[in-house]
Image 1 (cartoon, rainbow, N blue to C red):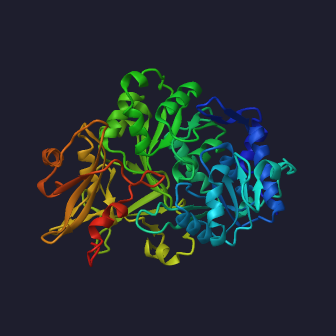
Image 2 (image 1 turned 180 degrees about the vertical axis):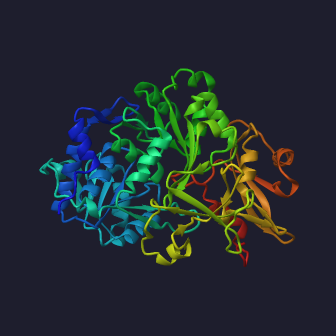
Length: 518
């Protein structure tokens, strides 16, 4: 039985000449596709994959910086019922080989910029039948040149197996090897509509990418934009001033961002920011990693106050809470109330449900948008659920009005002298120092206390800041037991592509000789 036309096909039928996609690069190169043109490219890619034998339930890897052909693959795979698996192009060959092999991918669609990566790992990924390259000439034996390969493919609608479509996005790997989070179908339509209504998206919005599309946040909210028939503006690689140029030129109204890009934008010189009109921005979704209150305040100085939303969620659990613009300053550090169709439950260390405001517990979620499984990691999936409740290990509490506050990831919690200490609280306090550009707090070994609080600080350019000054500032804003006992300085913090700090990398030197990894 044939599937109903998918959402992109419907948009191409309803508004064929509306601009769907704009790829405007700093050097003057600009590609724009209407919905008709985007759908045609998608169909050619889908039909070409069918000719290679790719079909329903097969996994296909896509890898590349933000570009029209990356977008095309996300749609093409869905049309034929294949599972599109985004690959972080920042991975080492060893890490990339693990994801490609673990995913069981049979086909790779890659930006020619990363051709060498796939040549390097080819022998370690024997299940891959073909690699096709876009944005450049094919190099290496057995590689398809994308334009030539697509040349003979039809733009007609492919034989659809969309009902079999799945998504599989690999987690950030902040606490170990990445895991493929599988979600069947296209999500719960009623819940998606309720989320769209709660945030206030409109068909005439212009969505701009802020960060790589291989991350589930930018890619997921872009998918909503296409479903609503909006125009999407791509930035191939993030540049703070160029992002402002694109916002002004295309009157961008919405985006999704991790904290790091916005911090870079807000730290631009005032006279430079003043050259660009930012008044069109009406929906900024803050997520991927916690936005500190200091960063929110900086954003609100530079952009319309009514534009800032925050959502809490994850690759596995979808969007779980929403903090609306009017509550940003009224509820500092909150991630908001439960999103439509989502039930939140806190479980304490004894396994009992937390019913009292202010008491922390591990956050569990009941929702139709929760993922279906971890690929080849059923034990981990079962470990993180209680019946139809699921968790990613975050600890939270709620207040009397039902607003939730994320304390930290359970694995990141520091236990010092029997006290539970949440690094996120300390990081938020230290970010208020005018010379602190970025900071990570972690527990390091202590014979006396088990763990002691350590801060890794990144300072702004041409700034001299001492360990004593950081500690003294912390004492002004934090209880004594939360104050860092030591501070080190770094040029940058290791982060995932989605913006999360890789604390396991920061911990390794301190815990290397320890028998216990507390």
